[in-house]
Amino acid sequence: MNRIILENATIIDREGNVSAPATVFVEDGLIAAVTGSPAGGQSSKNSGPRSPGQSERRPGDEIIDCSRLHLTPGLVNLHTHSPMNIFKGIAEDATPDRWFNEEIWPYESTMDGDDVEAGANLAIAEMQDNGVTAFADHYFMADRICKAVLESGMRADVAPTLFGMAGGFEGQLAAASDLVREWNGRDGRLSIRLGPHSPYTCSPGDLAACAKAAADLGVGAHIHVEDSEPQIAASVEKYGRTPMRVVAEAGLFDVPLIIGHGYWILDEERELLGDRAWIAVCMKTYMKLGEGPGRVWQRPGELPLCIGTDGAASSNTLSPLEQVRMLALVGKLQTHDAEAFDLKAVWKILMRGHDALPFGTGRIEAGAPADLVLWDLMKPNTYPLYDPLAALIYSADSGNVKHSMAAGRWLKKDGSLLLDIESIIAKAGERVAGILRKGKGTTHLAF
Ligand SMILES: [Zn+2]
Image (cartoon, rainbow, N blue to C red; front, side, top):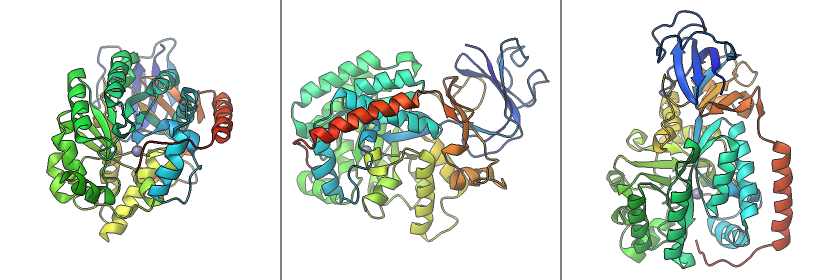
């Protein structure tokens, strides 16, 4: 792989600090050096080269002029269901009950592996367009997602979904464990964890079996908890405790845990989280499904908040930037405080997703994986740049993602994706025709 030199980029780090232009050397998937001057010049204080001569130009180097660009770590989408892109727009203006029980689960019951893969490819293309370099996915037929991820160049943490309610849980868990053994760690870009759907579709015993299996396999878990308020009362009635406590007692906080939503977390549940749990908030879904105000607004700094998009069947887009913007805006609205959810605080929430994944990404320094985005903010929608963070959080969109890379490989270059978009759309089109032909099936699930 040729070395890539990102020359004179203005770096915004994960804390939201903007530094003077620097040159970043990318080699073998990693950031080899960050110097304070152009390639060939003298290296300076920033974060020196790992070995002498690293910052000299060599024949074959690919040099990118970044003097008008801002460089940030790649974006992470910490909760999605990538195959659901095939259902984008199929169930609109529906209550959560109708959305799940009368639309999505009946449609999902007729899906096959080709539908899953076509939806995942659509999602991957959209995420790459939006500057996402890694995502945490949660779905069934997950081997087809793994295949799509490896072909796409980006990273993903994939959790095969397990439904206790559907029956045959032991078999599902065995298959998911096999998936972990087969795919975890592949190409350094794929990690697998277990995906019990939720405490309302899996029994406490099923959840405990998942926690034990995850610990035995040395992986984490990914689960939906408290995305809607009625789930809490229903759980107390059924089990005598809240969903978060059911999850805690099952032992799921003893393994690295991604919580999809956690939007209604109670004050007294915050202490359960420990230091290996992350909450992926997906504001657009809550707004679209009319889920109400949630409880993440007070003392948000004490919660391990991250950003997810949820699946496109509810959120319609897979842009972490759009989601963090909604979080900031609703945060200010809910707290009646324009100073709350300030730029740096929400940027850190956006960047925290890197900590929740096992790839070691999120830093722009020598030795770190090269998962990066170069933003062109010199555009009418983002200029002027009194504060580049404001431009990113409140103004930017996919059109500002000029280049991006994961593990040192280009995903987007000069504003264009490297994927074959025409073929991705054509394949999705074939699957959509089949989905409409098959219509809704019957489901064993209930929301
Ligand atoms: Zn979800």
